[in-house]
View 1 (cartoon, rainbow, N blue to C red):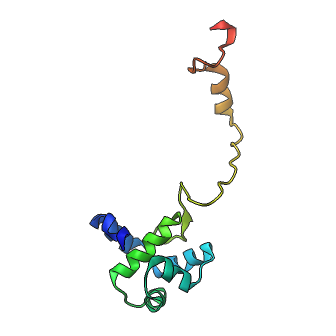
View 2 (view 1 turned 135 degrees about the horizontal axis):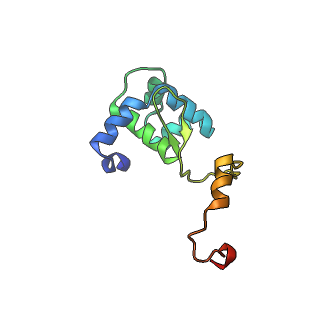
View 3 (view 1 turned 60 degrees about the vertical axis):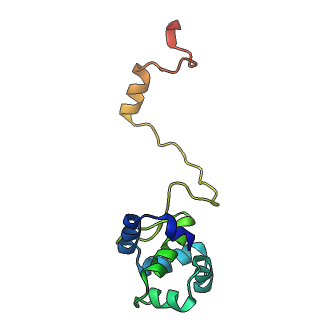
Length: 126
C-alpha cells in the first residue's frame, strides 16, 4: 500500500478518528461502487471491508487504505456528517456556478470604487 507510506503519522491518526464505517457505506453509494469494487480499489480483503462496515474490529491498515482510496476519488470525511465532495474533484465535471445576486453593499461598493486593474478602463479618463 504505497499511499500509506506517503502519509504522515498525524494524518493517519486524523483519518482513523474521523472516518467511520457509515462513511464507507455512504461513500460507496455516492460512487456507485459495490463492496467488492471498493475492496479491490483499496486493495483490502472483501471480508475485512464487510466487517469494518458492520462496525466490527479491523486493522488500522484496512481503515486507512479504504479512507485514502475514497479520498483519492475526491471525497472528504468529517465526524457526524455524510461524506462530501472536496474542492478539487478529479474525474467529475464541475458544476456551473452562478454568481450570487449583488446585495446593496456590493452594489454600493461597485459604484464608488475604481478598478485597480491597469487593463480596465477607468471612468472619466482616470
